[in-house]
Image 1 (tube, rainbow, N blue to C red):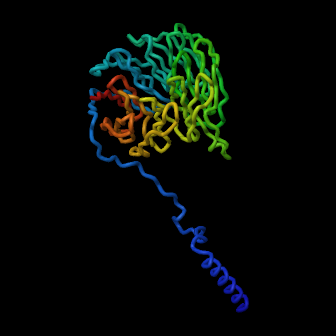
Image 2 (image 1 turned 90 degrees about the vertical axis):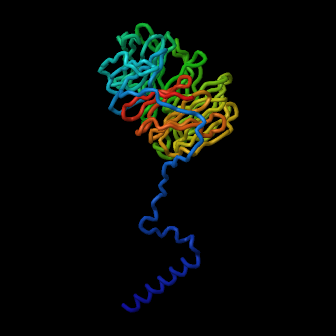
Image 3 (image 1 turned 90 degrees about the horizontal axis):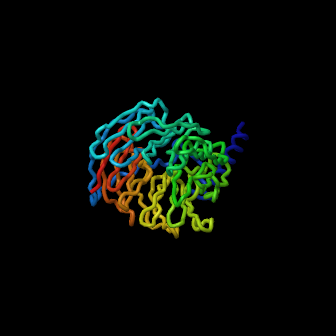
Length: 391
């Protein structure tokens, strides 16, 4: 027994000597309780700013209580503001003072909307229906069935209504009667984020992105594809790491298309030549916005970055709102507005990324913002609608 113990002690001494001689770096694998915990990042604490822009609340209203499963925006048309909640209650307000003009129970599970144009109100549902109503009184004009749930707002040019489905479809419906005119379908991965890009109409075409990391340029009248290109490549080992959904709106300006994906890149494409002109690494699910020849992206850590539209050079970066649960950015008077998880609205200089103004509109997280001139319509996650003015 003593001989065996001596052997053990000798081996232990040799082992200990090797560790000491090889330096402290070799001890990194010796983990103690709690040593392997990753450092937790906390949301940025708001610093005092000089208020160069004044923000005030004109009115607010309670417009819902259930969580929205897609994206629903307030929508301004003329002197009215329209909104539909997840329970299907549709509201028409007087824009300037918030007086309720009418309210309608649609009994739909609204999940994408709303578009107000050509005196119509358009939204999509979790059942995959596109619904069109009259702006004057909310009377239904038509409804049509798409191929899957609609998680972003339909759009229209007055001739066709375009809706994007969660299954990778983009469908065109006749504006007057709702008959299906065409459908464009892409194959989406088995694993993707819940959400879809919101199509936009620019230069006579539909532009949108898909869960497979591609963007398309589509003729609205026929559904024919003018251009379809990948904006990112991700060859990671796991299916989870290969998710490259494009869930935010793209930007089209000066014959350049810019799009960004989750776990991928932000890429600019020359629409005349149909080829990429610059690309940078970024991960985002939010809309892009263009101000002052800059494309603004908010990455997955809520850092704002401004890329030169034609060059892709990072012109400024704002980290003062890091991890604050930001909304998608919107353009307002050549600058940028975003909301955060504490109900603050931040106005950021589009030229240099500095803070211009801040206003706490709600005690709850801000969900969506839309802008018109110097006005902002915003919603929070407790179903409240606010109408703000900038001066």
